[in-house]
Image (cartoon, rainbow over the protein chains, first blue to last red):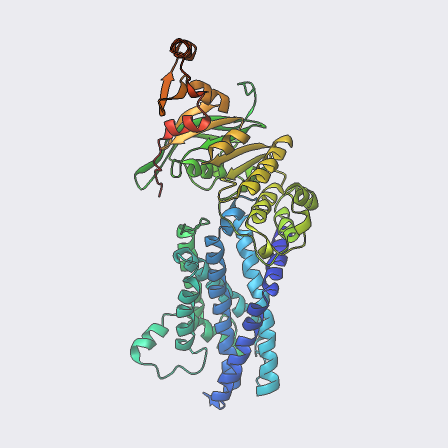
Length: 248
Length: 291
């Protein structure tokens, strides 16, 4: 436990020292929310769009932080030999990955507070209807996308390509699943695609607890699909994850 | 000096490893005594790094027995990782941390770390203690790698080509540092493709070629293995070279003949082979590539 906190403290120190990245990561969701809330200023299915977009951005944020963030950090560090060296120390690998994930979660939590504040102050958005359920949903989503992130890191070979690859996955997924606004009128091919993506079902859960005040367990099918994606990512990681640089 | 009754830090017996059907290690055996500096010397691709990575627990062996500090590195036991320090050929340290913070980060992984400032002094980075890693020169980064490897107070240190790419002055100071490790009683396994480095630092050297150890002994023994002495001089402006196992007699005959003819043996030289000659004879001049 103390080693986990030790690593987490250093991960945070490293993150905040990189000022450009820190500022960008903060400003980006706020900017995105401001833009989207200005475009969709009405209601969606009888719910204020400021609320729908806020819930959508939380879904996107969880995928972006846990999936893209974790995959990028792990691949870049693996190719730089950082993971290889760590593997020769007594630091247990699960502790390390947990610390990296927790560090990105700390950042996500601060982002979330910023988003909630901006939504309430500037766009009159309401806070989550089922707060405990919302917190539980975020934890579930982060766990699922973290599993997928470690799985993706196991498959992506180069540090130069990792950013592009994960963004090509995360951004279209966010649009298709409705993170950035309504997705009712998709062409049938895209709709079929949207219907298998984990973010679609994760957003169903988030919308349920956030907007309608549903129980976290109101939609067992969605929970099952989200969990299955996370387990699939983890299964790939267990088979393919390497501490050694791929390219030399 | 290193006799069988000394306890061994490393024991390797008939170690074998193939990559995609290509044999990288074809049965390697050696022992490293406690407190010994042992050099694995060979051209690129000979199997040095593969051997070391199996000992460090990074790679699994196909066959053979391996014991590192009495444990099997293939099981990657945490207790073993508490006691080894590893300097890799390439590994970055977070650029935004200071030298002292980087040492503290790694010290936090060990049950009984050394004092961080002591380690920084030991590797000669005292003046850079509070400098960010990204501001360090190449040689200083290598010292940082060594400091990080020492911060857990290991009994055994692996150094994989510790001075590759160094200028001569940086190499000398790295050698000094490695000698100071020996005086701390650390066991050191060093890989290098520099002959002079092996000769300067190692108590014993294993020359490795194409996955086999072709010679093993102290640097003096390796040279002593070769009986041949070379006698060189110039005659009528042309270089003459004679290799012989019987230098006393040959030299006597040559000088007698020259004195009788009242001739000078210009630029007369009697030369024992250096470790470099022995090495080149053993490994040939071509580099075999691994991977």
